[in-house]
Image (cartoon, rainbow, N blue to C red; front, side, top):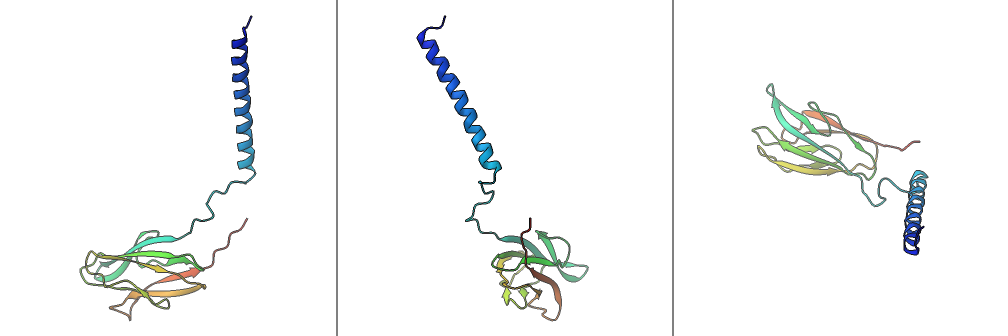
Length: 152
């Protein structure tokens, strides 16, 4: 036969288990119905990439390091208010300046081993050429600003 103390202790354990189970079910239902956002509303989106000036087979190239690949890559940014943050490294022995025509944005003069970060924003869809400011006749590559829409 259970005494009063053991009976109260058993009730407490049962109430605690039932409460925990109800709480767990409520959380599963609440999250499963989409009441919880996966990305905070206040989080500002940006796109970060990195490229480098490099001499390959006697010709100046831009090499994609982070966020893109290959030589003289086509860079894609989101049209609107999303910043495209581009870090440019000079892995060549000569000085260079990365310049984006149409947006009139450029890095500082980059000596060997130096880097600089620029921020690009394009409100409209468009295509921009980029080149070394010290050789403005030779277009190195393009930056495409495209509108991105969410779909179901």
